[in-house]
Length: 273
Ligand code: PGA
Image (cartoon, rainbow, N blue to C red):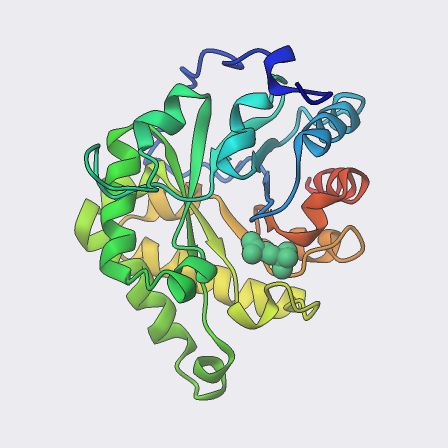
């Protein structure tokens, strides 16, 4: 048995009965910050332990901290201060779908969240807006909070089609699940040109799109729009997080590369006010 084996850690981290946040539809401008780490296909058991140790020493009671590691590491997280999430789920409840993971399985190993519609899955796995909407519906049926990713490729921004593109990504989900259930989501705006490239959107660019997203939701329900946690993602680092998180419509971040360094991730969490 290799050292640091998973067997030495509890199989199921905790009861996951954290209720799905059914946010009030009245306007409440006190949105709680949320910082989520998306490890993508990186990390190992050692990183699980390092991140838990690093965050355990910090005062992070003012925000929600979520880590989305690859599936095999989900049940190795034991800290009650860190919520965990899948990076994907199947649109199906169960059945003959080799290689897929269901929402129920994620829930059973302690997940409260699941990333849906990440641009890497839209590109690598041909996930369409319609499929993303089906997955959101499935996640809600299994009581997971979807972290719904939207964001434009560079050519769309340069063609001046940014807002239509983002609106179409949002509308596919809104029309599928209905505006009331949007209250159970977290939205992450991740411009594709900023993901993993080191090119972060400026605070102003992020704010412009976050405000658009909130106003787009507000056309259907002002309370849901006001309470929606909207995260920014794309080359967020400890050095630029404070400027991004200071924007009025930016409620935290979805962090890729920098979430693989416990110290950097902690610095980003501390920048969320
Ligand atoms: P990045 O990734 O922080 O490495 O740019 C963000 C993401 O893909 O969620």
